[in-house]
Amino acid sequence: QKEVEQNSGPLSVPEGAIASLNCTYSDRGSQSFFWYRQYSGKSPELIMSIYSNGDKEDGRFTAQLNKASQYVSLLIRDSQPSDSATYLCAVNMIIQGAQKLVFGQGTRLTINP
Amino acid sequence: NAGVTQTPKFQVLKTGQSMTLQCAQDMNHNSMYWYRQDPGMGLRLIYYSASEGTTDKGEVPNGYNVSRLNKREFSLRLESAAPSQTSVYFCASDEGQGAASNQPQHFGDGTRLSIL
Image (cartoon, rainbow over the protein chains, first blue to last red):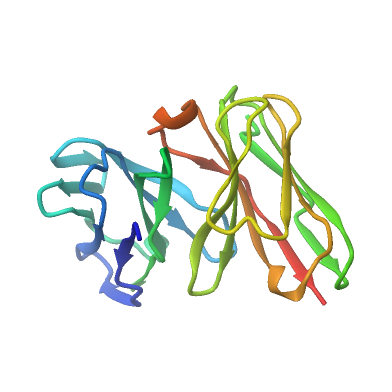
């Protein structure tokens, strides 16, 4: 069974602090990793993609990938109330001969003013 | 710039009724997908189409059929709706092709479907 695991939360972080979201995956051969943000009642929105080991920064967001540990994380600096949402980790895996995007269940993040 | 457009946005059906969910993308993407999202279950792939003219089953295909009408459009049909199919349905697309796709997917706004 190919899986992507996230802590479902809720994760509560004070405004201005760093929010750290974590994700582990089961397929050692995975090459593509994505973070989506989903506001309540809305569709998933791509916020970060990462393909190589290390850090990738985009504004207040940093994605970190460690393929050896099969671990990908998302850091949100200077957290704002507007960051309150569910964050979905998605990993490309080969299932039955085709690459498919497998989603974690999501971590619900709440930023407290 | 519409992206991925789904219709309808909301629908209520009675058990046994049929309906088709429509999806269209204007990004010239090759691959299109249908997911359902249920509380506590995350996003689960129903069917996908890696290119025009091809469709394949995902994780939860039972009770559904799909048609890739052309490169832009990918529809999902419920032939005989059941209460277990009450869910939020998302269509997505990406520019990858076939088994080599490693591109991020872009989602439509979703269809909220209730089966009574």
